[in-house]
Every structure is written in structure tokens, then in C-alpha cells.
Length: 400
Ligand SMILES: [Ca+2]
Ligand SMILES: [Ca+2]
Image (cartoon, rainbow, N blue to C red; front, side, top):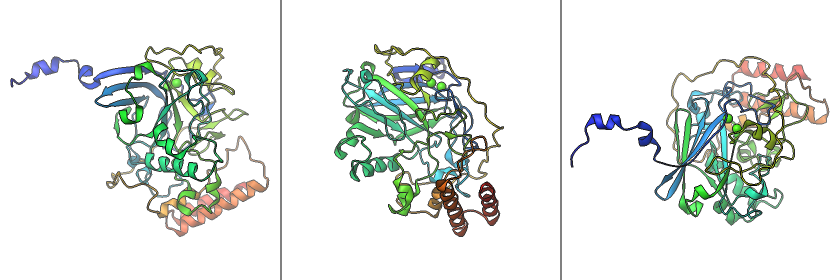
């Protein structure tokens, strides 16, 4: 076989080599990582403005699979380079083993394009609804802890009918796919989804609805401390961190009087005005197709984009880990081995910022007590230093 001259190889367009067979290519505006227009980034330097700003989604044909590629505004930071408040001295690689940590991407696929056929709800913790004309049969989920999230969803379904989400336990794996074959490169993260899950590879005939939510940086304590834990009673959020009032540490904040209707930070839509309208209270998400157009049901009024609330202060510098994390075994489920660090998960998020003072009711004082106890547990477990303990304790007590 004759080898190809180097000059000829170099002459090939690089994009052609890298992209393969693009079936879908939908772009998204820059700077709309503000949900319905009211969101501000968390205080913790693990999140920098733009980290959750989706810029595009492409779908490629592969043998017996589709590859989805989400592109973001910022280079995707590796979990081993980032520490987050509340995790003590641990970097995020303990919790996120697939090369990213900050976001979840759900892609809801309407594969039959029959109005009213399929589900119109979204996964737990997202809080959005999808228009009946785009009701989905399959959902593909990119999340930093896919194995754990899959188990959470199964556990929730087997523990009782309380949640009212996907019905039969056996059908979960047919409807929900948690991606584990994940590749992160620069600003892009891609993953493959096999035909055996999708049923066919005719994505060009489908309608898809893609959303970005903030990923929870901490494993829910209820999973590792037993079901008796109060945290276990929290509604299933499936790795999505909902926005909270003010400017919280590891959750998206908002300055508006009313909480956003959904936990969505960025909705895939070439038109930023559509994002604002669809994420408004009572709004419905509208799927997109290969022509980058809205579906036939696109009748939503265009509403003015609210002015985003500026952050209350500059983000602190990134606390980069000087040494790379030790290699981890990708197959080990994060929660299978109880770690002392799990105690960190019991530390409730800090109360809302000073701009939105909490009512000092019984729940408030109970929360502060829980925080103090969790803090003591972290110190006793050697997860934070005595200085860190005293400083956090002072912060809590000053609020009482
Ligand atoms: Ca965007
Ligand atoms: Ca968007």
C-alpha cells in the first residue's frame, strides 16, 4: 500500500478529519448562561462565568452509535485541578471521575414525532416541562457522576410512588441513558450513546431539547449515612443544584424576588429570546430539529429579556491544586466505599446572602444547629483544620 505524502495529508481540511459525519449542528448564543435572565454565578471559584455557557451541540454518526458533543464558552476544567468550599482539603476528582464537574447536560429526544406521545416532564431536579408536540421517548444525560445518578434514580423508583416520575423500574434503563463513555477536549465534551438504547440512529428525524443545569458538587449525605438521615428525605434532584436566593457558594443565585421557574442555566436555542420565554413561569420547552428551527408548535410570545443582576463582587482566584490527583478507577462507584469526606456532604449550603436575610424561625435555627454539628464532624474527622473550623463557626454564630 502506497503511503500518503505528508504534504497531501496536511492539505486535507482538519475539520473534515475531525468531524466525521455531522448529523445535527445547533448553535447557542454566548452569554445566556443566566437561565431566565436572573441567574448569577456561585461565589465559589469552582464556577467561573461562562463555565456553563453552552455554545453548541453537534451529533455525529458512529458505527452503531451516536456521538453527542456539547461545546461551552470556557475550556472545561478538570476536577483534579479544583477545590470547592465545603469539601475540606479534597479536590473534586473524588466526586467527578469523567473529566468535568460543573454541569449536567440533559438531551430529551422526541423520536416518534407524534404529538402527545411520550413524556412532557423532565428529570427530577430540573423543574421544566416540555411541550406536548415534543414529548420525549428517550433522554440522554451527561453528568459528572453517572453511575451514582443512575443508582439514585433506580432507588427512588423502587422506594415508593412518592416522586411520580418514570413509572416502572424496569423501564428506566430503556428511557434514561447516563453517559459514561465521556471525552473532554478543550471547550468540548462528547459522549457516545449506543443504538441499543436509542432504537435507531435517525436523529435527523427527531426533535431534541437540550438543557444545562449546575451540577451538585457534593454527594447527598443520605446516600452514605443511611436512610435515617434527614437529608434522605430531600426530594431527588439527580445531581442538579437548584438556584438559591442571593449569591450562594456552590449554587446559582438570583436577585429577583421570585425564584426562577426551573433549574436550567442554559437552554439550547439559537434565539436567546426563546430561552427567556420558555424558562418563564408556565413556559414549555420546545424541541429543535436538524434544520436548526423550532417545531411547528412554536407559538410562544417573545418577551423582553430581563437585565441580569450583576454579581455582588469579583470571583476569588482559582485555587488550583499544585499536584495532579492520583489516578482513580473509573469503574468504582463513588458512593460504594463510604469515605470520611462524605461528612462534608452533610454541611448544608450557606444561608442566602445578606441581601436576602432569612426569617429567624424554628427552621432557621435548626438549620444553623445542623451546620454547627456538621462542621464539628468535619473537624473531628480531620477534614478541616482547627482554624477553618473556628472561622466557619464564627460565621454561623454571627448570624444568630
Ligand atoms: Ca449559551
Ligand atoms: Ca441558550
